[in-house]
Length: 253
Image: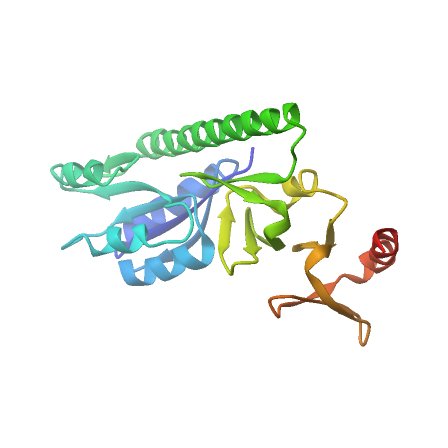
């Protein structure tokens, strides 16, 4: 089981100490990747790290933090509120919190909250995978593999494979860069798409990139291999993939 990534937003040292102690004893299910003293700092960290869950132990004067969450380009992390004020639970669940932990914090409350997060993520992924499988089955019946179902946790987009210039890995996420300038994020990793994209035109030139041969405008062989695309992007071909890339290009000539 892959541990979920968490960040903590709090000014309370006791909260940090308890949650980090919990992480030490439960490293198989949770990894605390960062902490912040304010919601502004927290949002910046969220954008950089894309955590699965946020432990929020801070008094919020208004809804600015939640408005900033809504503007994220990727799926909103799950929220676990922590407070010594029991009535604060109303605000927590108003903003779709997975759980509310009342102080003083005990490990049983944390572990129940964490497992709720894990189960919610599993349910959402299962639902999206089922939707994608249904689309793929329909495509196979229609003998039409021109479209790709790209899944995030809140929607599925169908994109024409010919419109994809390249795909870029970003941790457990994948970004699709399209001809129309649009960028689409998927909650699936790049490796999963290696087996889905049409291998007549798509090639993984690097552990972080899969490219569409149809949109290469130039290949530079000076100081390594570099592919330039119709949108002006230049991407490197990893040294260990250069020989296979040469064979791939010749096959398509």
